[in-house]
Image (tube, rainbow, N blue to C red; front, side, top):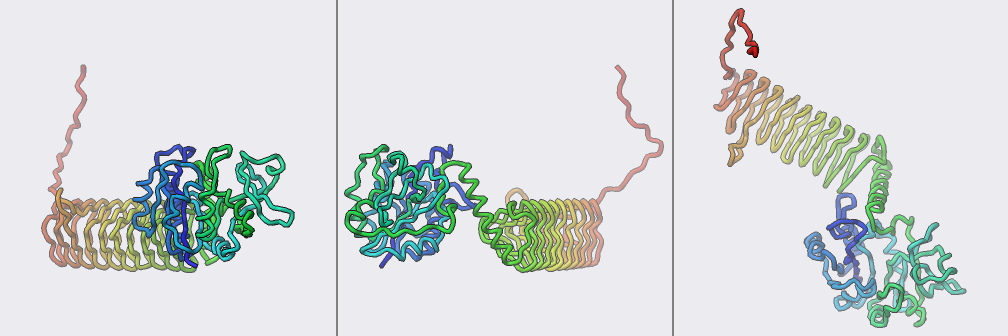
Length: 454
């Protein structure tokens, strides 16, 4: 049977106290609704439908690169009403209903639920909670079969004592859903059309409600406020930390790690506290990441060390590199083996050759450095003329003295030396010395200025 996934994402989320639609708040750097869309993709869904309402255009824009269909819920009249907006787009197979603010739901859990669905069975995901307050309760008959879901506001005292709760996630055939949705009523405390009422309809038809449960309750927890958002974030990050440690990564503190994308690590990697990894990041064997560093969309070669408070963004490090502390490698930075970028150094669109060193307090942008180049403290490649960017070329074994300015476009030849404090605006030949500092003047017994007396 084909599979349609309907993701409900129309709510405003007023308790988030934000102008951003609730489902667009990010978990691990990705909107919650995109987590759910990606899970649907993992189920090989034939069609994924997102029901939008509040801030719908922003949700459309956030999912513009996803192969999803949209249905619009102009008025929020309950979950049954929301699913009905997508009814005309459904195929003839199975239908799975998910929620855009339940981002931790696992593909394996949903696959187990879907396996039970056929013409004589629908599927319902339930969860048993120590504190079921706020959840709809699962009502079973004497044979243990599910016969209804009762929302807390409509529940009797005996029903409130039930600890098996509704997650809202359910699956059924398209034919079943198309029979039941038109029969929903808003005669309840909220005046809404509850999707959960289809459970009683299924029982009345003799269709068995098959249930499944997640591996842990956190998997089906929704987000209604900032505190819940933070709790799910830490749960997600803890899972990533556990997986990394199982693969041999050493973490100084598993609770102080943030991965907002995909992090791949070789053996014997060490990550200190407070580090953030964004986008696609690969760390080679033996890499060490110092505390409070950020690595984004970068490859860090084996045995490299990134010292504390460094930012590596869109860079490629070949290996045995030394970075930081307090260094910033911007996109296009490429370091050959054993190249070093030290403290308070910024590079951008720069190739740094094997064994070359930019030890401290320098900016190197739109440049290519050969092998064994030494860049003194305070050196700047002046690459921008106010309109265009220009390149600086520095040959093998060149030595650039401290506090120098290389005004691009310019080249410094192989083995050349630039004296400290120079401003270089013309090419420097191989094995030559270039110095542009002004002559020093000394005046003996020179009296210092004094303040005028009142």
